[in-house]
Amino acid sequence: MLPILVILVLLIGGIGVFISTFTPKQRPAPAEKVENTPARLARGQYLAEAVLGCFDCHSKLDLGRFGAPRVGPDGAGGDCFGEAEGFPGTICPSNITPDQETGLGAWTDGEIMRAVREGVSRDGRALFPMMPYLEYRALSDEDMRAVVAYLRSLPPVKNAVAPTQIDFPLSFFIKLAPQPLEAEVPPPDQNDAAVYGKYLAKVSGCQFCHTPVDKKHQPIPGMDFSGGQEFPGPWGIVRSANITPHPTGLGDRDRQAFVGLFKAFDMPAEELPAVKPQENTVMPWATRAKMTEADLGAIYAHLKTVNPIARTVEKRAHPALPKPAAEVGDADAGRTGADGGVEKVGEPTP
Image 1 (cartoon, rainbow, N blue to C red):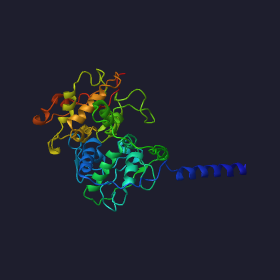
Image 2 (image 1 turned 90 degrees about the horizontal axis):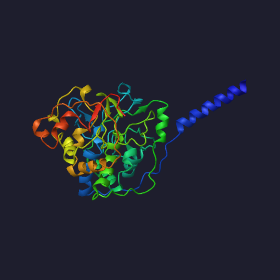
Image 3 (image 1 turned 30 degrees about the horizontal axis):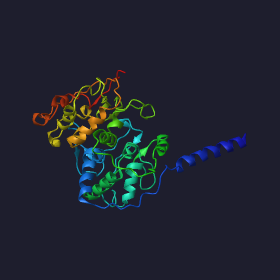
Image 4 (image 1 turned 135 degrees about the horizontal axis):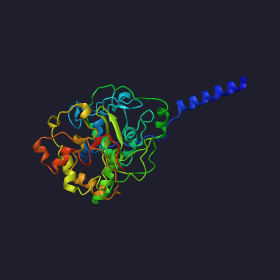
């Protein structure tokens, strides 16, 4: 009996050592030093602020305004999410300003690029996939350089953010998520609206948020953009809308109406409707409203090419917007929370 107990103890101890010392797949951070140019700064600012939504997570948000516009210094660190919001532990978006002690100031450009697209931090640990590196890995090399250049230009803010703590066993399984890039990532053809729209829909999170997932939080094959994914948070539980071209999704909504749905929210943060946090939405209207009409139109062009899927999601109505802003495009749709918003929990109809 004693040898069996010894073997069990050794086996359990070995498993414990393996779990605690296992590291994610990774490659050395690129040695590249990004050249700062006016064109890169402009592109990086647009990507970080409007397309990628970097500051939607890495800044404090005003949950008392619909769409949760950011408040405080951009990139200084966001609000933590914990068990109360349905998360397995405590996830705290980090300070991404160039502060030497509490931000990215001591990081190399290559370390930032690897973290954003490959999910590995400076110290080699896996980032929690709430940081959408599985989507950002599609970001072209040049767009990644532009984002790095812009982050370097932010005013440094000294703000120590609490470290993320993930409960076991998920703390182990997230180590399996990062995958090193194995080749250069070329830029998309911006002259082909559908091709460029596919790129934007990927890196801006449209595909990730509007695709249902299984119990392991993996996208369900063949259900891209059909909605119904749950998002717990201070807003309660909401589900993403169906944005396929099916009548239960975008339907016959035209390009102008789709663009107008976003542009209706293009206004100063203080003009967004005041709401209770539990009446808010995870859909970053205030951020995506800053995208150009051409880029929003490109996303629309791509969405019209995806497989139409019948899937009804119960709507959560938007509060009324100030009339001057709502006159852009299809303003009524922007107010009612029709296709494209994030909706109230309710079983979708297949």
